[in-house]
Image (cartoon, rainbow, N blue to C red; front, side):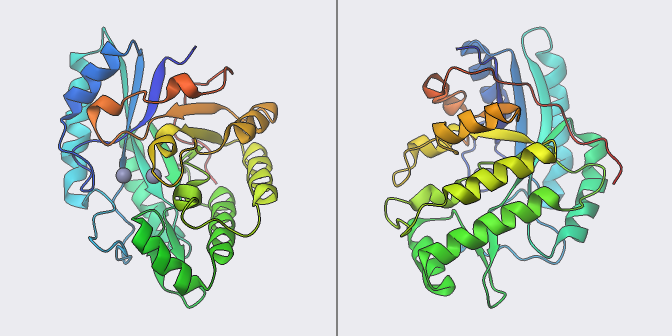
Length: 280
Ligand SMILES: [Zn+2]
Ligand SMILES: [Zn+2]
């Protein structure tokens, strides 16, 4: 396996993760033989958006960002001979909150090396927001709010399309996170039809827009999913389209670093290019 880095990693600054220290992730990465690690903590949610997760713990509070960045900078220095550490954010794409997200990126973009754009929040047809990946019980209630499993999938893939084409300014993240996250509970709530066409469309839109794909192994360990986000067949398609494949464990605890990388197809994996420098 030619994978030398884990580029989707959380920290104790994530309120729904473990309290494992950032240094523990660094040590684990070195022990696993990695040369690169990127911290991508959940960025604070955009101004005016209230967290729909039942425990309201989807992201890092705004007051913690400064400490998070400082701690990462410190680790970068301390371990510079052993590991290339980059600091980034996993930024939510929330339909209707593009402007607020853009300001958030303007604020923190100059301070980070890399970022991931992810869809966790969906807007229901009635305008109510939900957090897609919170729990299987919550997913059941989302299905009833949207009317069907298929309706949830449809809105998810439509929101991803919006994310890819959205104008989020010069610091717009280049990498799209776990593009099949909607399948987290697929074995409990299987859709009546496949959404392969939608996934293929997402991939070609990503290629057109020069985005990278987060090859996310966390799904392998989710009780109702047990698959990489996205499945191998789509990883291969992305590769064929020339989309850079960037592996990430989405670890929320230190000993999950590089977890499942041995199950990834034997392809060429890329290093992240960093946050966008275009000025549109
Ligand atoms: Zn998380
Ligand atoms: Zn995520």
